[in-house]
Length: 471
Image: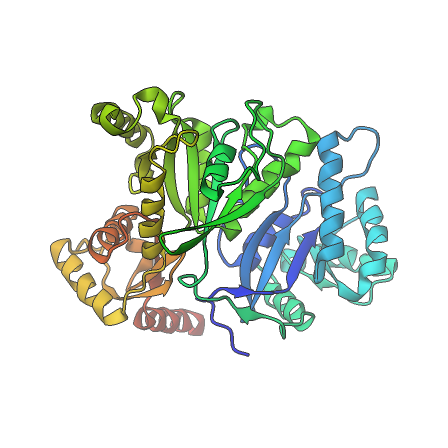
């Protein structure tokens, strides 16, 4: 089966990167993704959490997992350290393939304990020795064979040495026969993730939407410990609701049980189409809200900023204050300028005010997320944009935009092929994104605009490089 990197697939095999702390797992994770992605914790509140990404390696789709560093228990571990190790062990047990990353040189006690732990999983284990760039410390690296391994792959995650060999080995050890193309997102239920700080009314809104009491409602922050799913219909549209634990600041995440509650909350972003980011209207937007929205925007999810408890700010109907809402909206846009496209909807989850408008907005947003533009129509619009705002003409800043294509919907992504990608400024990329939103019907959603070299510019570069090598 041929796989298209522009499509989404399900039932893909999983590959876990394991090793002690600071051995280079995150650098290898970035390298295998073929793009730079800072491997920090995926939530603002927890560190050393496993990070998962959909990857396309050797022409095959898979799920790549960067695990927390494996540490020895010498009586100095915190409860959080123990939870990280427990989760790493769970991932090892579940993964279709395990990549054990070691560092060239003398192995540590942590390395040896992890090797011992992995012995029962040798049938799905690849052993990789990192930091051997340019043949450095290769003789030390081969000493790892004394632990009974039959083969090793020596790499440099930072410099890219032998990464192709590793990718070939990974793909050859996996079974892709069960992989299926994901169903058309426009035909499946709209998945809503309710995210926000604790005690902003997520569970109350979830219960109102689903006409149930599936979520426990309490004034005690942090009551919801797991993701609670529900479903409902509105105007012949089917919705899924994912009510999550509140995401707290890092300094506030102290309870063991909350560590994985936060983890599961963030993972709902992988299943969601649209995020309802609940903000307490009386408290206003916080730095934490910005971080949650950034997580959703990075994944191309639709985001609606839900100003809950608006009944305490004047209410709805005849008592609704347009001036109060305009002031609050302007304040959010001032502090959150990069999210100006995200709709802001005032509601009362408890009383029901504004909920219909919230759902109407979600339907309009979902239609935009699933919208596809034909390539001829896109390039006709592109010609107009280039005429309105031509690229710079200076010797260092000059470039030509050859053509554009839409490579995916939900998330919405366009690729522009240009003569000199390095010359395209962030400001010009922002201009192209804004024109897509304004002219092509994506006013409510995040749009990714990737810049790639055109085929002719790649050919010139290759000819130039060949000439330099000849001389």
